[in-house]
Image (cartoon, rainbow over all chains, first blue to last red; front, side, top):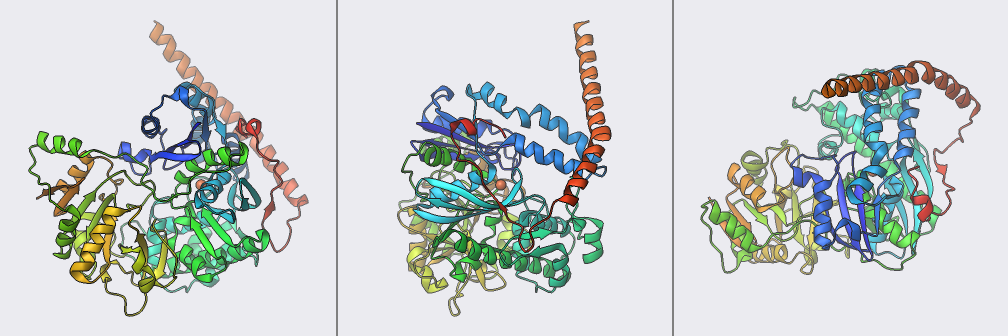
Length: 555
Length: 68
Ligand SMILES: [Fe+2]
């Protein structure tokens, strides 16, 4: 049985295809169009998924859309009524979008793919993605995002095939929207800059607790209320209101200098998020009686929050679905259908995220020959890469199938030597051009993880956990954040063998089982998809060497 | 000629859509807003929590076909 999952028309449109409950292929539309966070209908991603499955649309048994559009429209109308007459500027552009496209998804899908879709609720899609991919038999499931249809947060329980949502918090009370409002206030883009705020938080102190108490009331059971006086997202034009500005002062202009106040606001926001998350986790445990936790939704990209939950030991085991921005919901919808509705007993748990397009060595050779670019094929590319990295060279590593989700995990990565504290600035200057305060992340051999980070038995293959580095083990300063923590990726031989081999060689050469990894893209663009994209980015930046499927291109 | 009528139809559709939206926004929404206000006065929020209990029936293929 083939099931296609789609999330689209909000942000990060994604498609995924399953055969008998097992994921075959999935990718976000942005990689095909080159438009970061592309929200348009994922025609390219769907085509890629169907090609990977080797089927045409008529052979699909079901198509699952990740939310209920009419329910979402109900919330939009309701919000416009509540904010009347101030919602006026947002109302007139928004409604034609709905009547032309968003309310017609049923018919759009029928026209494009020849079959009417099924609709799974937004937070069930998130929850199902986390629970059924975790491999846990029984678990508490928490989902948190900006907003789905009405829900902004849910607590549920997964037990064997069944998944049930028990409690929700509904719009306009949303921890995701609080985070986004502060992100906008601090001069970053909503649905894009939230991770930057998390990075910035480590520079500041939580000195704005009194002010945040006015924004949000947090109850002992982890539920909360946002005081709407301070927010303007209900009007649909801005995230925060004049009262918010009165409370915190002038908003920071984009690209302007970051002040101590900005750092402290970010730090307090992060503190509020973590406090809420710990209360939530404790309540979810009490409510469900489960000793394992699954989490999904956009807020779960906050790896520092995830680290805090892990460290709290409230739950014995954790699974954080590593695909934020609603991409994970494209996976959850089909799994909910397969397990909960159709009653099938099994699907393969997630072991890696390499579900995107891959390219053969011949394809790459032909490309290089057609462009008249010199290349060589080293005998042991991983060894050569490790040697170059240890000589402080910046290398781009393009290999196998592209990663699903926002992170490059070693198939579309830029790799560098983490021992040199200056490497961060060098990378920024020559390739990434990111804000100076944003940290880079380390990749570490799985078996070395606990001696550097503690937490025996924990794996973090998706870079979704931020943990403090043990004292005396800070031998890779370019990949450690200002507060002594790192957003770590653990690498094992089975699922990421070539990167494993590079790090092993690097360890032989330097005694350090860690390399620095950052995504293979430049600022403002999505991660590269094809050898053509890779070559273009390589030639337009200060990357020294490019490896593609064992082929080495020098500058 | 055909082109002209097509354009005219388009203009009329846009006009009609805006007329409809205008009526909705300026005549009906204020009434709804007042009703909402009255309902919110009648509703008592439980103290000490902001969770809503979910009592949805189990999904089946039939409920999944619905966009609501
Ligand atoms: Fe979401």
